[in-house]
Image (cartoon, rainbow, N blue to C red):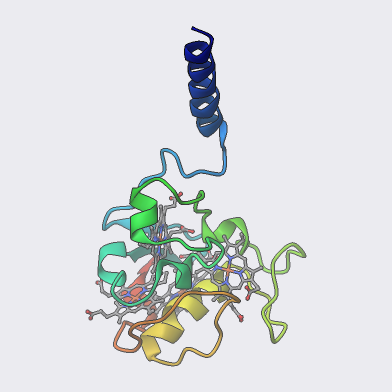
Length: 154
Ligand code: HEC
Ligand code: HEC
Ligand code: HEC
Ligand code: HEC
C-alpha cells in the first residue's frame, strides 16, 4: 500500500515539474512557409522567410545559434529549449547599449545580424559566424537584391 502511494506521489511530482519547466518549448510551433519578419523601416518593409526550403542549407543552430543542440528531431520531440526571436537580443534600434557586438566590434542590431546571416550566405561569402554556431551545408545562389527580400513601401 505504502509503495503504491509513493509511486503515485512521485508520478505527480515528476509530471508537475515537467509542466512547470518554463525553459522547454511547450506550445511553440515550427513556423510554416510564411514567416514574416516585421520591419520598422519607412521604405524597406517586412521580409519573408521559408523554413522548409532552408533546412537543407544549414543546421538549425547556424541561425538559432543560442539554442545549443537544436535539431528538427529534438524540436519535434518537444525536447528543445524555447527558441527566442533574433530581435529579442539583436534589438531593432540602432545604438542601444544592450545590443551585442561582433568579434570585430560591429554593433549587431537587428539589421546587421540579419543581413550578415541572410545576405552573406546568399552571396556565398560567409566570414562572420556566431560562436558555437552549427554547420553550413550550402551557400551562394540566394537572392541579394533588396526588393527580393523586402516588401517595398512607397
Ligand atoms: C536575403 C534577404 C535580404 C536582402 C537581400 C536585404 N535584406 Fe534588409 N533585412 C532582411 C531581414 C531578414 C531584416 C530584418 C527584418 C526586417 O527588419 O525586415 C532586414 C532588415 C533591414 C532593415 C532594418 C529594418 C528594421 O525595421 O529594423 C533595413 C533598413 C534594410 N533591411 C534594408 C535593406 C536594403 C537597403 C537592402 C539592399 C541593399 C536589403 N535590406 C537587402 C533581409 C534582407
Ligand atoms: C536560415 C536560418 C534559419 C534556420 C536554418 C532555421 N531557422 Fe527557425 N527561424 C529563423 C528566423 C529568421 C525566424 C524568425 C525569427 C524572428 O522573427 O526573429 C525563425 C523562427 C523559428 C521559430 C518560431 C519562433 C517564434 O516564437 O515565432 C521556430 C520554432 C523555429 N524557427 C525553429 C527552427 C528549427 C527547429 C530549425 C531547424 C530544424 C530552424 N528553425 C532552422 C531562421 C532559421
Ligand atoms: C546557410 C545559407 C543561407 C542562410 C543563412 C539563408 N539563406 Fe536564404 N537561401 C539560401 C539558398 C542556397 C537559397 C537558394 C535556394 C534555391 O534556389 O533553391 C536561398 C533562397 C532564399 C530565398 C528565395 C527563395 C524563396 O523562398 O522564394 C529567400 C526569399 C531567402 N532565401 C530568404 C532568406 C532570409 C530572409 C534569410 C535570413 C533570415 C536567409 N534566406 C538565410 C541559403 C541561405
Ligand atoms: C539570446 C540572444 C541571441 C539570440 C536569440 C540571437 N543572437 Fe545572434 N548573437 C548574440 C550574441 C551575444 C552575439 C555575439 C557573440 C557571438 O558571436 O556569439 C551574436 C552574434 C550573431 C552573429 C555574428 C555576427 C558577427 O559579426 O560575428 C550573427 C550573424 C547573428 N548573431 C545572427 C542571429 C540570428 C539570425 C538570430 C535569429 C535566428 C540570432 N542571431 C539570435 C545573441 C543572440
